[in-house]
Amino acid sequence: MAVYQYQATNLSGKVIRGTEVAENSQQLAEILRGRELFVTSSKEVQEKSQTLKFKFKTAKLSIFCRQLSAMLYSGINLVRALHILMTQEENKKAKEVLRDLYEELQRGRSFTETLEMKEGVFPELFVGMMAAGESSGNLDMIVDRVADHYAKENRLKNVVKKALTYPIVLAVLMVVIVIGLFTFILPMFIGMYPEGESLPGMASQMMAISDFIIGYWYILIMVVLAVVLVIRGMMRLPGVRLAWDKLIITMPKIGKLVKVIYTARFGRTMANLFASGMQMVECIEKSVGTLNNKYLLFLFDEVLNDIKRGEPLSVAISKIDVFDGMFVSTIYIGEESGRLDEILSKSADFYDEEADTALSKLTTMIEPIMIIFMGVIVALVLATIFPLMYGSFDGIG
Image (cartoon, rainbow, N blue to C red; front, side, top):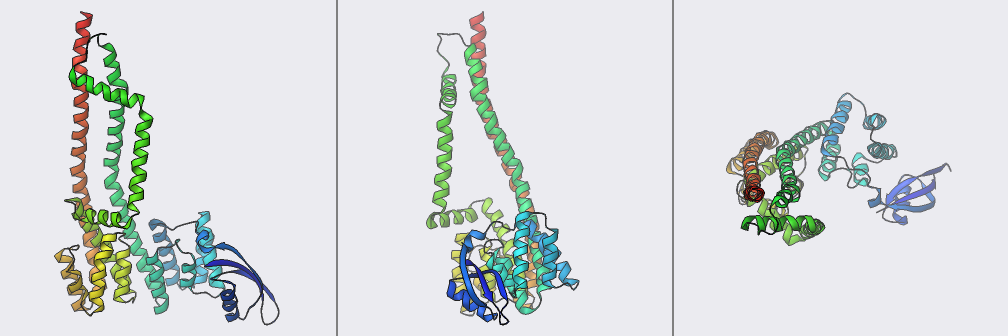
């Protein structure tokens, strides 16, 4: 797809100028002919993929949906609502995106078409739900549900970030302390030791490490950068990514936590998509896609095949070891009662609370382990320093 700048005339001979997305100039002419416009000149200005300058994050998308929903419920039409949001937006890139949406709606495009033109700016889940809401005529209700969805999604992300902040700060502090001990403290005490005397065994080994860090620090930095680049490159390989994503959900302790988070996210997404009127297969595909786990996508291929063969979701999903029995039972109850979306939504709220508790427990486990590790390093340095101090005192005596 490419963006074309065109000049055309309407039936009355008036010159119209604008931009349009099309595969080629022939398709451009057909699109404009459907609007009773006849192309007189056109040129390709940029690829569609190059128009991506801004991506709506979860928090901003939640606020955007909440504001849009409020205006739609109050009776303001979509075009006017987008114009209001555009004029009030302070972020320049977001303002430009909203201006493009507003202008395309004025040209007669549907809301879904305008969102699809901004590939990468809005999440696929958001675009899919807007399409379902627009086709069903319940756009205001769907936008409100999407606002709730992204608000809870943002809350879960903040909980994860908050839980990981302390361990990360502690890890950085630990690295700084170790570097300081080996590059400043240890050499200072080595210098106090009498010249000509051999260092004790542990002191000799620790000093070798200290000399290496001081003399070849740039090599250590290069090694760390190389390892990071190699890992990032390997994660792009399908087989490696599949194995890593499988490891994430099968690791002791951590795997259970990840499964709880995945369950909450899957349940909430499924509830919103199913309530919007989307078909079951498409709901599952989009819901699993939000988990960003290749191993789960692999497992759900069989789930989708089972559902296409007529099996209920609860039966198909029970065959994969991802969700616990209570969640599967909840789906079964929702199917039997005809209130699957409502029950999935409540289950997602429950698993959100479970994720909070699990994250707190995980953080509580990580903190003492890191403190013990840092204590061991400091103890080794002190065990090296004290003999050196006594040796220096003996030398003075």
